Length: 219
Image (cartoon, rainbow, N blue to C red; front, side, top):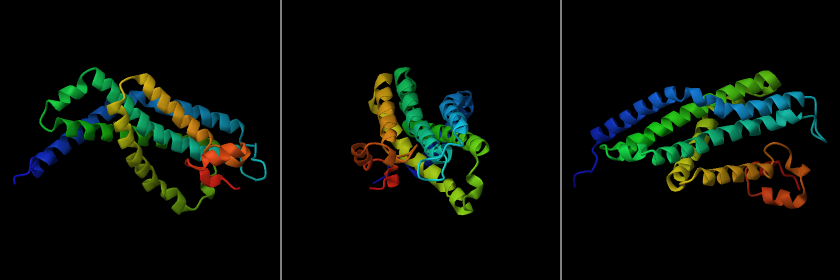
């Protein structure tokens, strides 16, 4: 049986999608401020709390919270960014026009993933650099732990971007996406990402066992 899409057609579709993604990335650089504004504000706040230590330890509030801020920003940049873009382009007909082209859907989604991944990585680099300059602490970490970011961040984007595509495909109203964003923020409150989970009520600690960051829990 002859394959529906041969290798040459697939290669052309992937190449077109990659080129489209680079163009969209360049055109979207003026929106990078929306990805880094709130994390940078949080880092500035933590800078003024740099001398405040967590009860029972020598760790400052800033050094504990900054990895969570960076991680959450990477997740939101990947997941929420591509979901909101898909919802907007479903509404204005961009996605429908892409579907009318040969292998247009494949090229469209490859382009979106390339563009959104690039934006998320740039936002991650800016926020991380700002955090290191403002709060420090990275210099004392082993080199292999710092270099592990080279595979952790792309892996995180690979995990969150498909979820963002699903949200963007099935949700029809921006308000629905806002509810998901609020739910994610609520999840972080009980997960121990920003502060030790042992500082919150016990029943919330047990709830946090089901969420990322619960490894901070000591019962």
